[in-house]
Length: 181
Image (cartoon, rainbow, N blue to C red; front, top):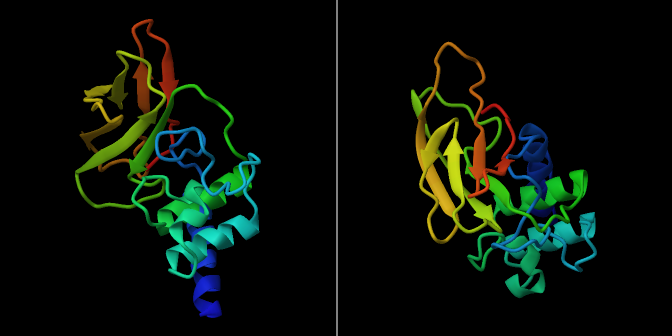
């Protein structure tokens, strides 16, 4: 079992390195400003806290022992949620309470041969009347803060950038980052 834990943690670190620039502006949890994997709420994530998340994912530790890992509110911990915690450990936790855009799919570095791609994500702390655009095309922002839109990919490009922007009634804009997918 110890080998499985180490392998899962190594996978999380490897995936984190591969998706070096996650589209999220800071880690978030379940619509709040919780730092992914910050079990003791000290605005940092340690290796011990990441191991708690791995143990929750493996069923060795009860899910309620660290709610900061359950970023989607599903009651379980996934490899993607562990990766968010690893990123928070490497890059630091966000202390911002302002609006943030989190792209959940695709992950930075994903590879596809398809001509189009569905971009999905969510907005944390969205202002009233917020609007989302992905690569300039408007996407519906649902009442639960999620959005998705199909975008066309350019087969001539090796990297296709994905940029999600949110504007409010005052035209203040937040960006998700311009990581190439």
